[in-house]
Image (cartoon, rainbow, N blue to C red):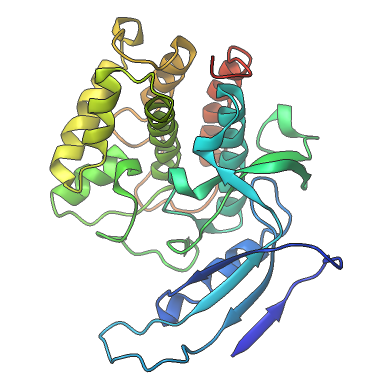
Length: 313
């Protein structure tokens, strides 16, 4: 068993411990990524890792996996527990900044999903994310974090097409869905993850409406279709949704509020055919083009925040 201890802990501090069984050659990825971004805005502060052997006999398989524990300081709730539309979007915005912090440090998350964004119990102090947007140059209070780095890659090292891999399908970008449905290998890109944030917001709004019993028939139909395990049905659905959201004013049969419809429309419009203007398929590292895209993506969300209420009524 190997342990790595973090710092900045006080007596009686509580930790959140994640246990997983990653492939043996990937057992250090999550730890390395988050420790390289220690106390960065929008990300968890990890304080220790334990890698060991399972005490029970494990039958031989073609995949060599190993048990790993990683502990983080922050405690939070699922995005679906957001106290208001405004709180939900702020948590997503802060998680997008966390994604940018990872990417500029050389990491790509590759599994942005509704379960991997946490709303913190209380805002925590983080390093201000200078360089991404003027509104955040001196912002230190963080309300949402992006967690779970099991699928992450170091984009400075792993420069090969990702191919079909484990992920959360409802949130996969249209570009990757299209490639996978055709059996085509392609590189995962930062903008694929950013599109996943769009589908996270869409899913969360639908699920919250369902759980609070004000969902429309269309809401229920959309989430049923998003939950499919088939690549082609999901590809067809998202393609149709992108067309519908080109004219958000014509969408009336949903509980999603007008500000969110406009937000989703503008966000989806940023991806066009799947690749932002000026990008190349093998351009995986952070640069001026990617930073501008993050900034524009955040600006659309920031323009929406003040239109949102502080309750779900």
